[in-house]
Length: 114
Length: 117
Image 1 (cartoon, each protein chain N blue to C red):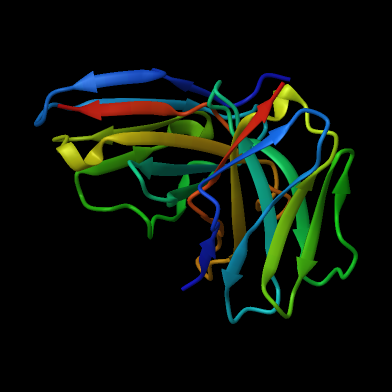
Image 2 (cartoon, rainbow over the protein chains, first blue to last red):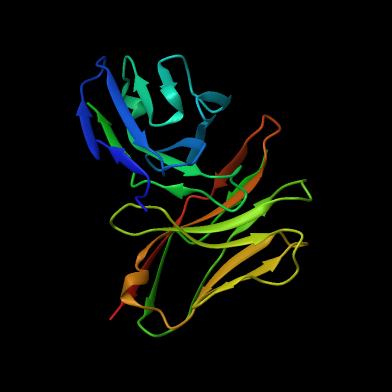
């Protein structure tokens, strides 16, 4: 079975620009999560989708971040406008059930804002 | 709020030897789950091992085992017969029900393990 796919693997943008990250979960996984690791800090939860609905978005840092999961399949995370502090690695993960047995993570998108 | 502490930013071990990575956590919860994930240079986060807090028996997965001390809030990972492919960043993580319909992971900062030939 194909794993969790994220692209691009690396993105370099200028401050003020817009970037859209995409995540394709494992087929059949209703639960999709976004996490991120900014430089030197812990990996932090951003939000959780169940199918197309946002179940928990308590970790979203501010309204410059917009996540969608149209049709309950792939998800996008848009940052608009990007700021320097948004640089880091953005991870997507999916799980079939609620996640207690652990998620399957993607390889992440490294975002660099210059 | 839960916190996870990995006190060893970097470690190294000779191939075929045994190494133990430390992890402590702080929580007032009684039901939770603990995980070790590894992130090799390929950057894919891979689940290594999982422990349910209500289980007293320590989890094992082939060469990987944990020492779970619930009262001490300690969850160390032991890697036996270390192999070059074990070189990776290792993250300890705590999971509980968030109360908002979600099981969230709280991660430590990670331990970078290098296996030396």
